[in-house]
Length: 112
Length: 112
Image 1 (cartoon, rainbow over the protein chains, first blue to last red):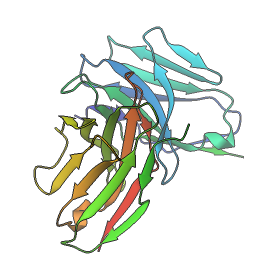
Image 2 (spheres, rainbow over the protein chains, first blue to last red):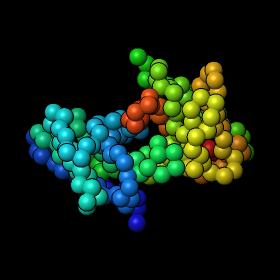
Image 3 (cartoon, rainbow over the protein chains, first blue to last red):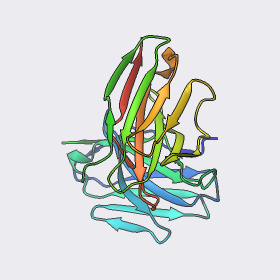
């Protein structure tokens, strides 16, 4: 089983749609959680951290369920510029407790 | 505030040559991380360094790969005697004391 698992997609949605991505992680001792986005052949860019109480940043809402070891990202009112690969990222707390473990990503294409 | 800088952006080497990848962290960041992204795969942690110290190298291949972060100058990821399987995008990230890591544009290594 992968340490961080995501549905690879692709998700093709029309502009204005709401889309949700899910992610599960294997290590119950994981300490912190993030969503990054990665455009084709570019570096990952931090989208948002994910907090236990859930958090929102504009059109983006992230939720964490520690009991189920599940993280989600909701994008409302999708824009063309949201087209990217969304990476679920977990700090599993092992070793130096600084290394991030990346999911393989979920590809989103927003269509005009 | 300039972001994480990496150079070169593209590097072509023949089998058996050495590759040197450089990373300058964001100003004020003393933690540096190297990740590798193989084609069509997610990012994988390689090594975590602070100035003059390797903190966690649990993701580094046992042979041919080394990393340093000297007191002065950029962090260097060195790959000796490169093989075709080393072809990948190598991303450097940096962070302050907090957990969030910010990524550089990457170096794309191609081994012929």
